[in-house]
Length: 179
Image 1 (tube, rainbow, N blue to C red):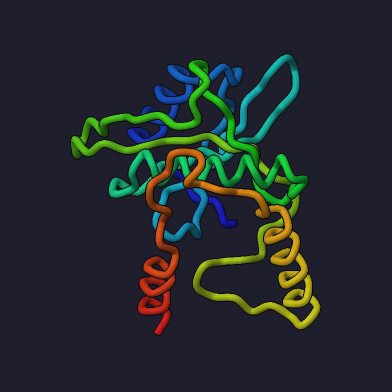
Image 2: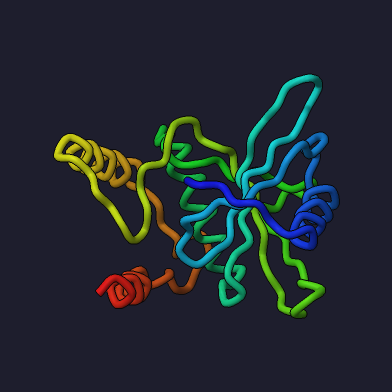
């Protein structure tokens, strides 16, 4: 994904959130990641004992609920537990949770934040413009099969989630933007 530079206020907010909730090491750089659909994402590089590590920090859209985010994180954890390594691991905060609720000091809106491991490789997929070759489409289909296999046994109702996020609503919004 393409990177972009950010304003100082957002950098300060990210520093505050990371320093207050994670034991990550010293932040070396923060850059915005272009290409997300509704959330903001940032590439954060930190130094821990003479090694550099990269993480993805996400600020969720303000209409995302704690239940929706927990559903997402639980599903990602389930996939990882079933050897699907093409999904990031969610990094736990000091208190053991996977999300942070923070009030933006400029617009006074509550936002949730989360930190993810940064997967190696190049991200060639975007939400809107995809120009994949035939071999890339075949590879994407194979990955989708692996994802479905790894999802077997995920029962959100057993985990206390009364209702699951309705993906068809999101897909409908996306379709309307593309057309």
